[in-house]
Amino acid sequence: MAGLLAAMTVSLTGTRVSALALPWLVLTTTGSAAQTGLVAFAEMAPYVLVKALTGPLVDRVGPRRISWVGDVVSAAAAGAVVLLHAMDLLPLSALIALVAVVGAARGPGDLAKEIMVPEAAERGRVPLERATGLMGVTERLAQTVGPAAGGAVVALLGPLASLGISVTCFALGSVIAAWALPRGMGHRAPAQEAQEGYWRRFGQGFAFLRGEPLLLSVVVMVGVTNLLDAAFSQVLVFVWAKESGHGPAVVGLNSSVMGFTAVGGGLVAAAVAHRMRRRPVFFVAFLLAGPSRFLILAVDAPVWAMAAVFAVGGFAGGFLNPILGAISYERVPRRLLGRVNALSDSLAWAGIPLGGLVGGVAVAAAGLAPVLLAGGAVYALTTSLTGLRPEWQEMDRLRGQGPPAVPAPWEGTDTTDVGNADQRSP
Image (cartoon, rainbow, N blue to C red; front, side, top):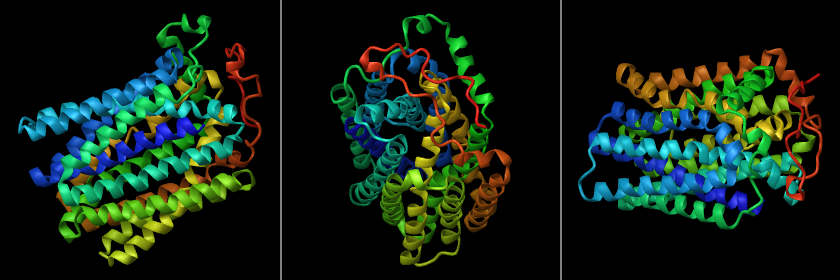
């Protein structure tokens, strides 16, 4: 479990650093919010598309191999951005192409790490909800360290030096995945299943997801909030930083404060997850973590007030991913994790490539403050009204009703029948 968490930490840190450095590089060199959104789209569209299509491949080849290959490709593409820009050989078209390669590699690489969590929990004899809580803490640590390092380095040395940190993190993530994770971890599909055609395996994942109302409802709600989050993080916050005069340092400060308190929230969630009533905790946490960020920037509050709002939102947000992760791992049979998670993640992320474009166009048309207020209002309505749907009542009934326990795959057991594809909630 420790090796997987370490690989996730450094890879996600690299992603967070580049997420700050690249938009600031484009915005400061072009002065265009629309072009900033275009570069964000160029990264996230391949991320979502490739991630959706590589689920059957991850299940067949094995997530461990996909994980380190994805990190290697990400490091190479990000390194090319640094090198070509330093040589003054990086037009916008080349930057878009390289950013697209990074996104295409990050999708399957992130997916591979996610679906190794249940196996890592079994190997470490860690309860599943605690494992998902630790995974959430890892993500929040990356959110803390990445923006802090990226914002400081961008402010002191410029965005290219910050991208160099991303290259180092991606390379280190590949080394950890290749050498620290046990070779038997992230096993390939059994021979019989590996002989099935790609589209047959893809269809199995789609059919399972289509028959899960709760998972589908989660995907739709998170898809809307992800679009809003993308508009906020890829464009709105940088336009705010430029117009307000606070610059990238305050952007990094707010993100790091939110990430730091989210680590605390994630640790609390990991400790008490087995006692939580998931549904009320989930929706209260979403309300505290989401709309408040939009509203506090819209009123141009002092830095200490912004930091306080981001801190509260971060602590609440630390409870979200442990709940979502536990529900997914309880519902989905192990042999289908790659296919189902690839589809559900990609559908939930489908709005992210559009978030930057929508945010840039909206700011150009209406101005920053109205867009921030509208974004906060839509966020609040989405996260509150969704909870009224009947399938969300199943969140607290699912605990302990996941796929039946079977011997671990590294003990020589065939895993073709792990879980029950027809399992449904009561």
